[in-house]
View 1: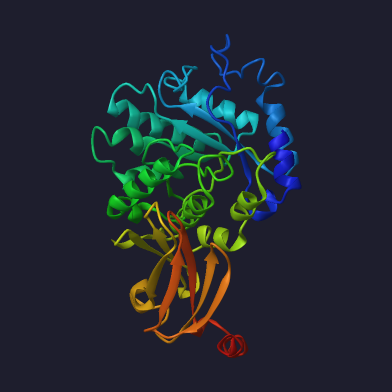
View 2: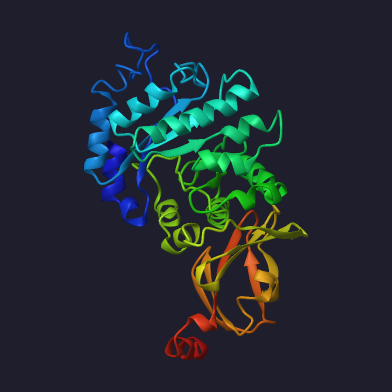
Length: 365
């Protein structure tokens, strides 16, 4: 309830964040006599419906956690054999998002059927409930996930292990995503997204530059922006980064294409993402972890195969700070300085998408 209050009072809702999500351990140790799930009596003494009503009164939505198997990852009752009644329970409580984990699932066949069955059960309630799956995360150790099938049932899906509040964790997620982008990127788009797990910005394990890298690449990857932090005590820099409207706009771009890594060389990585209005976002990541800021010369013809700047473009640096770089030619080379473990995030807008007056003003700048 306090987190919902802060989301409204401190500008999070206005920036676009709309869900308050409960993870594992909200449950009582057993189901009720009627076979239905029930909340832990000490942690949620007034029940989940009361909490949902409160969150909804703030103009926000409530998410909850369950598991496809017989037990959750923390050992509370899972949904195996109870998909229909659990889905109806969540609908009756006013739940708006279900994170469906994959612990204790039995066989890989039961895993797949469980995710499909819960998807059907949620749809059968008639209530719109966002369905967050971990299906490919648990399936990939047994067989190659079928993302075409997964997308039919899930709204977003985890592919890799849990994020931790550490740079090594963020690096491993970035590397796995890049190494498997040919497999996972085609599946992403409006209605279904790859989920690299939560943002740990505002916690304690990442430097300022590493926080910028996570925010920038999660925007490039069209990732769900789910924060794992305490908004009651977040520092001002982390708050400003998480609420950066231009970064959020890239993340939420309506075209819905997931970006990918173009190349890596000399401990630099170049990522790009196509955006609406023929625009592109680009991210230059310095993977070196020691030393001083390093120079990188960005050749614009690499981005989008040269398409956004074919007839000239306006380039804006968004992170680590905003800097208007003005009108650029197709063969322009932009000198950048990138901190160790940091990222420079840019947006390229074709000149053809600007009015004559705006282009004239930008050229003067």
